[in-house]
Length: 77
Image 1 (cartoon, rainbow, N blue to C red):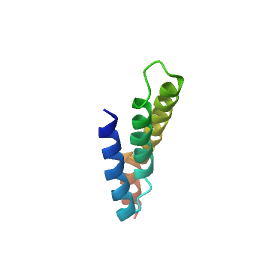
Image 2: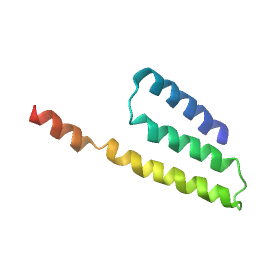
Image 3: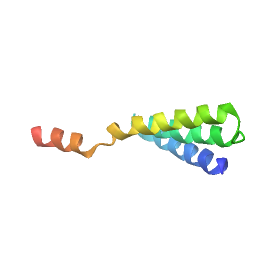
C-alpha cells in the first residue's frame, strides 16, 4: 500500500518542480506522511504520529483549494 503513496508523492513532486505551485506542497506532504505511516505496523507509535501529520497536511490543503477565494479575487478585477 505504501508503494502507491510513494508513487503519488513522486508524481506530485514532478508536478511541483514543473509548476512551482505552493498548493502542491501540502499534497506532497500528505502522500509522504501516509507512505511513512504505512511503513510501520498499526500498533507502532510512529504509525499514529505519521497519520496525524497526514491529517494535518490534508487540513492544510483545504483552504488552499477553496474555490470561493479564487472566485472573489476574479470578481474584484
